Structure formats: structure tokens, C-alpha cells
Amino acid sequence: MPDPLHHNDLPATYPDSWYAASAPIARQRPGLHGDRRADVCIVGAGLCGLTAALHLAQAGLSVIVLEAHRAGWGASGRNGGQVGAGFNTDMPWLRARLGDGPARALWDMTEEAKQLLRTLAAAHAPDAPFKPGVAHAAWSASEARALHATAEDLARRLAEHPVKGECVVLIAPGTEAVANDEAVRAALVNAMETMRVKDAATAVAGAMGRPRREVYQMALALKDTT
Ligand SMILES: Cc1cc2nc3c(=O)[nH]c(=O)nc-3n(C[C@H](O)[C@H](O)[C@H](O)COP(=O)(O)OP(=O)(O)OC[C@H]3O[C@@H](n4cnc5c(N)ncnc54)[C@H](O)[C@@H]3O)c2cc1C
Image (cartoon, rainbow, N blue to C red):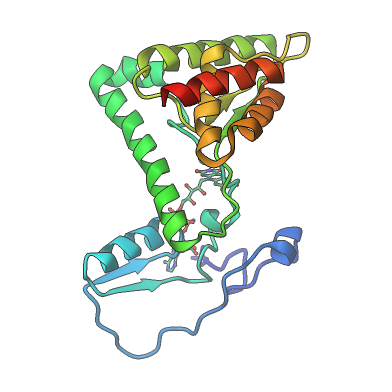
């Protein structure tokens, strides 16, 4: 049976690519020789394994992480780096299958995960060029309507817990590029965490197709209430 870990790749060797030439790739570490003992052994140095290792070590356990290639070799080192809310399915779908409470609990978990990521980045990678927010662009009028419905659903259902870090941008051929006020406010709340009010307003106005002056007024009002 072929070894799936080395079927496509030589050990720890990236194929010749723009990614390999430009990304800050983790150094190659020596292999494990002889016997080692630890409280926990984790297989795989991706986001999942390394996060688990960090928390276990912080809890006082000794940890060994075994990786077949390099840290971040798999999806974790090569993903889009987007930090979004929710899941790859929308909240109405989750609510219909799980009920309001469990769906809401799942949503809250993703919000906690985003907060955890920021905390970890601040503590361990303060120079990481993290920029909050995800832009959702629609390619057709029906997609734009679906995104509008999603934004409205989130604003209505999660009003006490605004959608932080999400910026819903509706752009469809033949459709005016607009975002509703809730989406603009959510994007502003998020942008103002890391930017000055003026800069946040300029960024959000540009991204969401709204007049800068109007967005600046919204930002000032938000600043006064937070
Ligand atoms: C193209 C792409 C884009 C993505 N974009 C995003 C995004 O923008 N935002 C987002 O949140 N998520 C994104 N994801 C998803 C996200 O990257 C993954 O959910 C996450 O990285 C999974 O982490 P992991 O630690 O479980 O797995 P991995 O990062 O794949 O880590 C697994 C590691 O285990 C090692 N391993 C496996 N088996 C063994 C073994 N037997 N012995 C030793 N080592 C072993 C592998 O070499 C690998 O390094 C994207 C995924 C892909 C593929």
C-alpha cells in the first residue's frame, strides 16, 4: 500500500512553487531517534496539533509533537488565512437541524475561536500581519439576495452579539454594490478594533461601496456608544 504521507512529496521538501519560494517556511527539524517519554504525544504539527500542544504544555504537561514533514506542512501552512465567523453552512441550516440553542452555541464557539486566535497571535506572533474581516462577494443577483438574507438573519438573531470580523459585500453583475447598515456597522466595529476611526471608515466605505462621509458619521456614532 502506498504511503500517503510521501506519495506526492519527498520528506519535508516542497515542490518548486511560488509558495515555496516566498512563504516563511518552518525550518526542517531533526528526526526522532531513540526512546522519548512524555505525558502526551501529538501526531501532526498543523493548527490542530500545535494548538493542542501549546495548551497542554501551558497546563503543565510534557508534550512531544511528531510531524512527518515540517510544522505547517499540511493545510495549516497553505490555507487562505481567512478568519471568518460561523461554519461552511449557514445558520438557518444549522437551526433547522439542531434547534436554536445548539446552533447558537456552535456560533458562539466560532466567535470564541476567533478571539482565541487573536489572543494567541498577540502573545506568540505579534508581528503577524493579521487584518480582521472577511469579504463575501456575490457573483449573481440570486447570490446577492442570499447574502443579504444571511446578513439580515445574523443581525436580527445575533443582535446582542454583533457579527465581528465579517464584512458582507454584495456585488453582482447589474446589481448596485451595496451593503446594508447592519453589515456596515459590523464591519466598522471590527475595523475600529485595530484602526483609527477615520481609517476604519475609509476602509469600510471603500470595501462596502458606501459614501465615506456617511460611513464616517456611523463610525463616530458607534464610537460614542461603545
Ligand atoms: C487550500 C485551503 C485553503 C484553506 N483556507 C482556509 C481559510 O482561509 N481559513 C480557515 O479557517 N481555514 C482554511 N482552510 C482549512 C484549514 O487550513 C484546515 O482546517 C486546518 O489547517 C486543519 O488543520 P489540521 O492541523 O487539522 O491539519 P493539517 O494542517 O493538515 O496538519 C496535519 C499535519 O499532520 C501531519 N501528519 C499527518 N499524518 C501524520 C503521521 N502519520 N505522522 C506524522 N505527521 C503526520 C501532516 O504532515 C500535517 O503537517 C483551508 C484549507 C485548504 C486546504
